[in-house]
Amino acid sequence: MATSEKQLRKIVDALAEVKRTSGSSYDSLKVRGKVFAYFWPRTQTVGLKQTLSEQLALVAERPDVFEVQFTAGGFGWVVVYLEGIEADELAELVFEAWRLSAPEDLVAQVPDLAR
Image: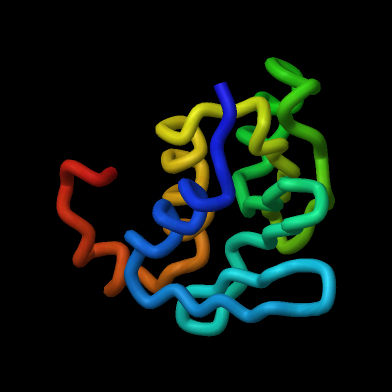
């Protein structure tokens, strides 16, 4: 029940117009200039943009896998421990983070089966 860094990269690479910027301790993931995720290789964690209600629900359900990172602009960011999540569940959360940041015209291009 763990997701590898390689699986995370595959999930991210499947999304449209994602730009990865590497810093000294983490990577920022953006869609058309808007950050939707952060990845910390050292801790094998990813921070994802979510709705406030989703942030609170995830943390309440599985505090060993999710924790509150911060809130900003009406969104709740959640830290996800890769060792505690399956790749398919992580893919859904990464897609949602991307969708919350991507412009409407880009989201509209995504096939219905991915939503």
